[in-house]
Length: 200
Image (cartoon, rainbow, N blue to C red; front, side, top):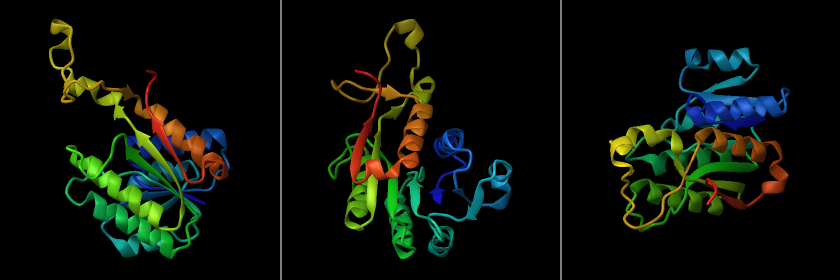
């Protein structure tokens, strides 16, 4: 059984669709916060688990019977790392055998990007958990470009807070497909880290 967290989000939902496309008989459980949010998944034959990263008991219940889970990083600021730590702890309590985690490129303890610190801490927690893992270090979503391009059509330039560094974008749908590829053949991706970016 594969548990997909953040199932109602774009990345989690698309990962489920790719998994079902690869193998319509995949045993998938979708973590959602409320029953009504999972109607579409049930119609596809996906089992539902009701839970929340902040509710540890709900996570323990959600992980029953799960061997592999995709930890889609929380979009909540402030206590993101604590939420991830809850999920990892609940997974270990239930004997989950493999964690796939959607991290970020360049995460480190001194990152000026606060999410980069949370992702670094989560990666360390996973590595120290004793559970096999695959870490997907995703680049910035190209899907967000329309929100940041400003007057690029008039100026011919896109401004981004990266100083003199080069930036790299990739489509979220491609990241979801990469998740599905790993989840579909988990034994060949044990304890590996992948950087998911566009072509250079």
